[in-house]
Amino acid sequence: MLTRHIEGDTTAFSEIVKRHRDRMWAVALRTLGDPDEAADAVQDAFVSAYRKAESFRGDAAVTTWLHRIVVNACLDRMRRKSVRPVADDELIEAAERDMPLPDQTAEREVSLEVTAALKLLPADQRAALVLVDMMGYSVEDAAAVLDVPAGTVKSRCARGRAKLAPILSHLRNRTDLTRVSSPKGAQLRDG
Amino acid sequence: MTGDTHYDLEILAELAEGLLDDATALEVRSHLAICDACGESLAGLAAVRELLSAVPVTAMPLGVAMRIDRALESEAERGGLRLVEAPDWDEIMKDSPWEQPAPEPQPAPVVPLTARRKKPRRTWGMPVAAAAAAAVVFGGVGLATQFVASGSGDGGVTVAGPAVSPEKSPLKTAESAWAVRASGHNYTSRELNGPLLGYFGPEPGTGSNSDEQTDKCVARKANELDRQPIAVDRAFYNGQDATIMAFWEDKTINAVRVVVVGSNCHSLRPEGLATWN
Image (cartoon, rainbow over all chains, first blue to last red; front, side, top):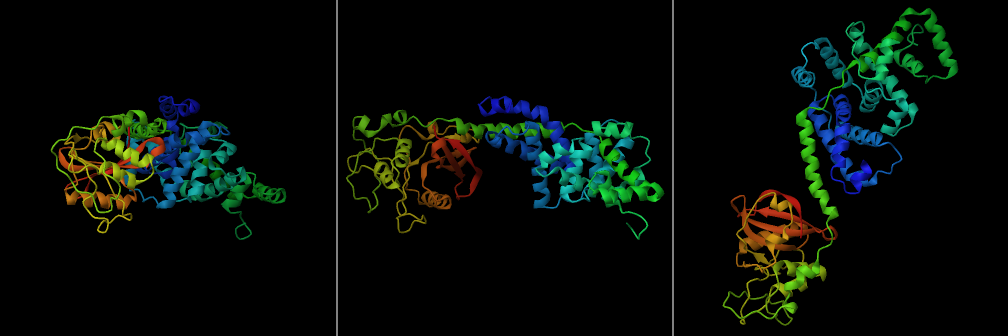
């Protein structure tokens, strides 16, 4: 598809966007914890990908390449300016926008608390946890996206979890964590 | 270990990730076998992973998707610049003086050339756009001056160089020259993002540089961009009096930077790119 785009097929990149936008949105939203910032980051990333398409060498999957651009766009935004703290009402509003179903209150609460807790982590740990624990990618895939060794990803995840554990401990025994978003989550849930 | 009693969470997390060396891992595991508190902490770390994975995946909001689509459409329009072929100079230059019989003399305002023009005068017959293009093709604005500021008492002169003298010009170079057209066209933003040659040419410009204010403004913008405009049109932008200036951005891809200013030389529109074809 990317090759078609480079060769001038004007519809090819739109197809790439359609295929990947939800996943890219999820990565950006979770990494930045702010819908507006996430929207800006994803837009920047897709525009950047559009421009950089010719530089794509095919030595990585298009998905990995896109993830890398999105994650870098998020990290750039976090480094350029510390993302402003999000007020509770904004988080609720964002959550309601994203999760309009009325019977997901408990899930929403967990989501809000996890999002708020993630924002307390350094950017590199947050990005690693988003990819591995939240998106369910393998450490190797996350390492490819972050362009760091797998050991670094593991280390960042370990330190991030160690910081989150006391913050999220009160949510441990929730019985409503039945819906999971990734194979890894299912594996953890089901054993 | 915390106070020689418990391991801290980071060690336990590293154990879970297999980051500890064998000896340390064995030591921690031995401790875990007899320490409920550390076992609980380890379970807490596993719960973090579960909590993180339980956050539902949400689809991109429609508004964001539409916004990205618009941004990419805009990028595609700009990206199209890369695909534009080199200008068809034969077509552009077909109206050049050496290709056409000399025009009949007609009464017309004559704008005297600046004192620095030394070369023989030529009768005007060249389109503004072609003149500007020629200036670039031949690599010098001095030549452009020669082409666009031409003629005298023999009539037919409608285009001239800048009113400001080289000494007074704010430009870094004393060779400033541009042709001012006065099409009166009411440009839209969309038009200014597309091919511009049809608006600026091919017929010669009918304006002059008698408006010192305009010339100063053009000179100022030229100085800011550190290059000469290839075409200037006194016209309208969204119904407002405007001066539209085109500067080469990247000649190899036929791209021009478009500057739109109002009567006070204030920008009416962010600078944008268009194609010179």
